Picture (tube, rainbow, N blue to C red):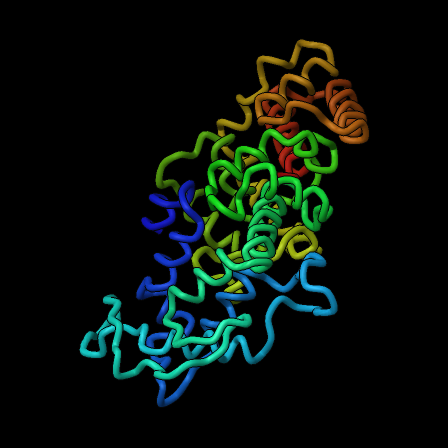
Amino acid sequence: MQLYRQSAFGDFRQLSKDMSVQPFMLFYLNNDRNTKYQINENFARELLELFTIGLETYGLIPGQQFPYTQEDIVSCAKAWTGENTKYNQTVRDTYEFKSNNHVTGNFTFLGETKNFRGFDIIDRVTTADPYRTITARHIAKKIWSYFAYPNPDVALISNLVSSTNFQNNWDIKVLLRAILVHPDFYTDKAKLGIISTPAEFVARVLRQAGERTNTELNRKALYGMVDMAQELFEPPNVSGWKQNGYWLSTSQIGARGNFAKLAYDLPSSSAKFRDLDTLAVDTTITTAARRLGLVTLQTETRANLASWLTEQRARSGANADLRSAGLMHLLIMSPDFQLS
């Protein structure tokens, strides 16, 4: 975690190298036991597929479906033999290169033949044509998909990479800035492109409910997230959690509603919008939404909220505290709040 805090806005190629020899990474993907006596392809496969070059050629390798082959994976695994952890530790938390575990002799990776060692693999996919461009586009696509919407157009990704020279400088901060100021980042497709993860949803609810300390609601949030299909620090696999449809089963949305109900019962919820109760319905909804960080609302969402609030204000015996909590609950469960 500290590595990403220090290097997340720096040099992607260097970050990849630093990440690759983290003891926990070596352990998690079995490279701590990758030796010339028993070659393990797990880390090599994920390094290529997920962390660097990816599975698309973007048309840069004519006639080839993928940018690398099974033989390249085997060569990559050979290059990483010996990049292990110390054996004499109860917890393997120290990286160590064991030269006697490393495959000697030449082998071929992405068209180059030599005796590769771990970092040489990363250098190859980030410096040699066309692999460096393919890698740069893969990383740009992953970042765009995380912050804007999945499956962006190839032309958009190509433009981001070329305009930032990312395939040469590997400056993550420059690429991220280009993404965040890109005109397509401010379209409705981007604004409504991603469902919040349970972690994002829970954090936003806790913040809006004023729960910023170690409270009972905070503790219940951890259990609630499991029902929403995300247990912190326990991803389903090395690729992590997927987006959008992954979070939209009936039970998972129901779990979000149950957590929102816990926030509904807090005293802070009854006071959240109480001061708006004498204002016009439309003004109340606009102001309440902005207090929750929603600058705009979809037409259908606004209409449904207006209908509910009008009815509630007309009911005999209804009070401002219940309307305040109810409005907060409905806004939290609206599609607008659920979208990142």
